Image 1 (cartoon, rainbow, N blue to C red):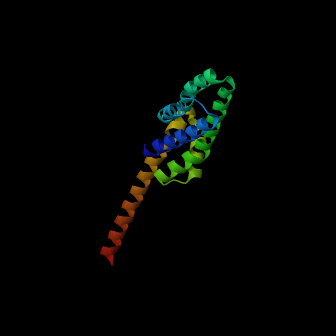
Image 2: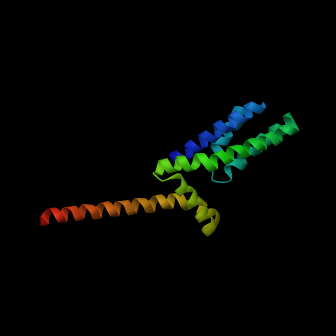
Image 3: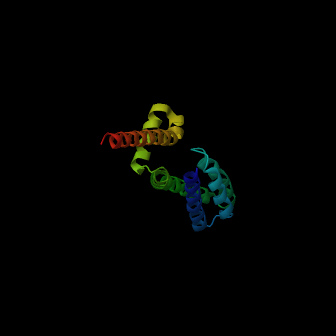
Length: 147
């Protein structure tokens, strides 16, 4: 959960920088909406861009195109760099493993696979590590008594 909040905060900062560069009115408020809605998997970023596009259309119609480009760039950075690294560090998983899990789960189970892949992997990994450590502890105890 902390990892997802950190990812959302970084996306909000990227949106704020982009909105400030193009001179969009209410840039801070719109970036804050982006932070809050980015917690929602997959739909959140698109929900966040709707108010920004509406405000951009009132300000200058070409600004709506710029907002769409900023959202696209922010999502590419988030999806390809930030999320794999943050989630990988939070769960002690290599970023390439995160990307592979998401791609494989998406092909196997669709949207639900994408949403549940990383939490499921984290649970299975924790169970396997605990079983391995317990087996090692039993093995070490058994060999101490035999010697």
